[in-house]
Amino acid sequence: MVEISTSAVRAAPPSGLSGGIGARSDGKAALRVVKRGLDVSLVLIATLALLPLLLTITLVLLASQGRPLFYRHKRVGKDGRAFFCFKFRTMAVNADDVLRRHLATNPEARAEWEQTRKLQKDPRVTLLGQALRKSSVDELPQFVNVLRGEMSLVGPRPIVQDEVRYYGAQIQQYYKVRPGLTGLWQIGGRNDVSYGRRVQLDAEYVSNWSLLGDLSIMAKTVPAVLRAKGCY
View 1 (cartoon, one colour):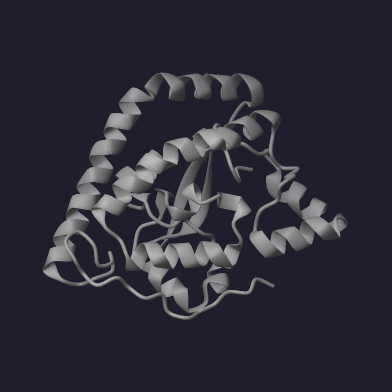
View 2: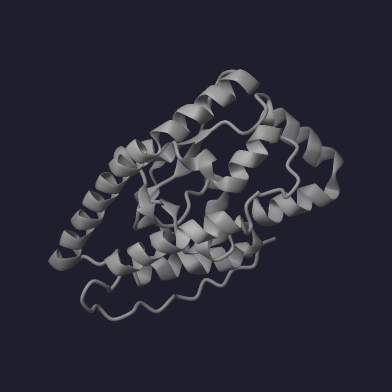
């Protein structure tokens, strides 16, 4: 069972561009509009810049493992609304059956799954999928989620419904924002970080949000991806 402290995270006092993205003031509402505009602008620029890479990945996936090229999974978004999160497909087509059989016959894997909702040695992931995950490029299709307003470039990573219970009282913090392509968890070690610490990082991000903070997280994401720490 995951142990998570549900004590409130202190919000930093409003100042300049900070003070929490969940704040209701007109000033913070204006900054949220700026954040949204930044999301759309940067995603469009990144899509054009990465178009050759996206096309190459699409062709390699098509040739090596066929259709479907993309995987969509129901996640929990802002205000608790469900949405489908997109990724390049990195798993076998019958991934759910593979996972079910693996957990039924492997107690250690089941314990790891119940603790983190992740497996370091995931039997569902294809060889090509491992490479895509290691480099995090499997998540590039989430540009579509950003453009649709379901996600942001920076924020807590989207969770599934089964993970809501792990957040305790802090789930209300998570609900205040759009999930992000990157965030404090990504630059802080990802899967090497305990789930309880992940929850704390999400709550801290929401309480202390600022535009400058978002830009800092984006800048730190590139070296974090290159290090591939905690990526599996």
